[in-house]
Length: 274
Image (cartoon, one colour):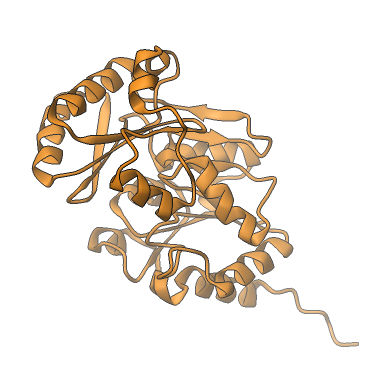
């Protein structure tokens, strides 16, 4: 059994931000052949399940929030690395003071700052709607301390993003990732896609050296460090391309599907001719 894991945004999705029919078909053929395909993303679990449903993915782990949480096939938690409560509270209070939108993701919950353009954009991108309670209620109820977030996404003016990023540089237990000038993702410094993959491998009883990982961005490098075969899509960052074992086509050209098709073609069992 082969285990292939893939990032989503910038790697697996097409220009319409969904799975192409070719990619769906390739993943189905891969899993029908007895192999395992696992999603590993900064997205929340609900958004990842929408994509899994397109190819019938089930009974496999799910690596969400860049490895901040790993869910078993029965949705129980195999790995849980949330942001420390004190760090989450500091980020909330700072965003409130400088008027920067912040979305808080805790397990299956998503608390937005307000019903604004940033929340609407994320809903459109992920297909998931936020909780009816706002981030202020998450904070005031005390749940931010008892059920701290696995990811905080701050969105807004680049100058405000830089201000928050500079503040958090002095916090050793958080890591920040600037996905766009207007986006700052924040997580526990102890979580990574590499750690998430290690938990996944334990659950499946496989060796990481036998796993493949598809990626495109800097947060995929920890995954590249632990798997046996790292596959970069052609549109990946230069550092990712340099670190990859193999380079496949661009995400908009179904690069992951292309690799799966080649893998299946070379591993196909041939029936002897009588």
